[in-house]
Image 1: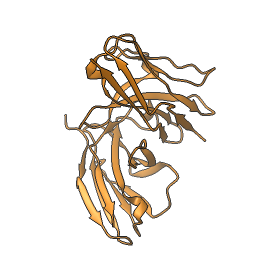
Image 2: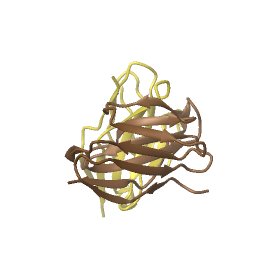
Image 3: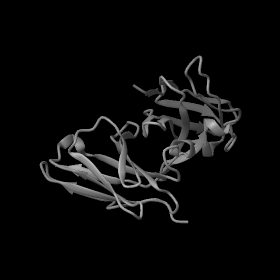
Image 4: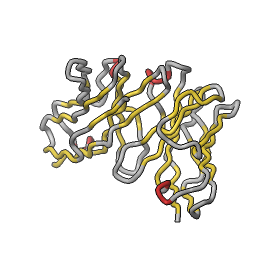
Length: 109
Length: 116
């Protein structure tokens, strides 16, 4: 069974501080992992994919297969980063996806 | 390029009734997934449709069923509604076939279903 755990429901940092949103997963195969973000009154949108190894809006995420983690990081948080963040795992063979319960990030001025 | 659109936006139904929710996928996307999101939780995967066939299903009972049409739009049908079915139902589309996950999903705004 595949599972995604986001241990922090709420995370609060000050503007300019580093931020790390944790994501741990359980999956027997090679995972496809994603981070999605939902800003206030907006729909859920893709932030980044592990397969592309990209940096979006200053955020990066590294897949650590040994620790089964896919933490989202940003060195200097901005107020506009305040949002709900979801980690997701997709099993492309079975067409199944699993989302974590999300972390609400608040960046204080 | 149009995004994913869902209808209706809100719906109130009585326990035991049936409901149909609709989703138009983003232009160029041929795969549609449906999710149930309860308050305070992440989206729970219901099923996915590709080329008009279900090709993945989560832990939902058979009274949750779906369709995908030749234009890639989709419907989610729920029979014998229960109070616990009250939730936000999200539709998401993606651009490829069986390897669709690698590209991520584009989400609609959802349909808020309330069962009374």
